[in-house]
Image (cartoon, one colour):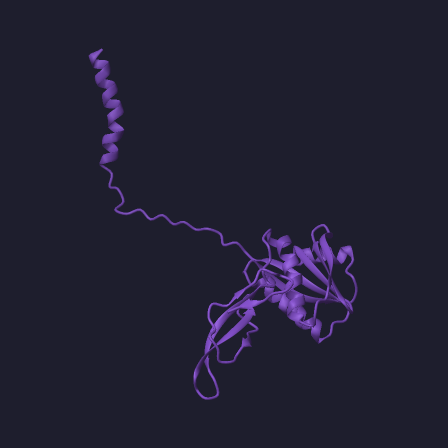
Length: 212
């Protein structure tokens, strides 16, 4: 029994002794890489003839949809409503989604399509409110955004803030300004010398007011 145990011990420890005689590397380098999620390509297609007003509207929508960096939008023109084969061809060209815009006198119709199956995901008709083209574009982008990301859109949001400036006599005054969600389209709403600080909106979406 003693001889057998000695033999088993020698067999089990021999690989360990052999391993300890090998030179181990002085440093180990581990490289970890992760795939960066790509932007989702989207076609914004205008149907029919478009004037400069609608071209501006389309460009603002494009800017809204691309703002977060999750999507990349390309504007294309179509003479008439695209057929199913044409919609499917957009998928073959790398566009899994297509947003078709049809302008009318008082409304703008939009339809979002899954191009792989040429299936409409959702479509609505927006009644133009006022004459602000930016407002039209932001409203449509707000309606489409939840369908693209599952998150509510905030492109119609307006930011109110104070901005220091000088009047014609060189005196420092504070202006109350508003701008779009991304800081563009700045407008001075209070430019006269007065005590202006901490501007804030009321909570009435249909009748917005600024308190300062």
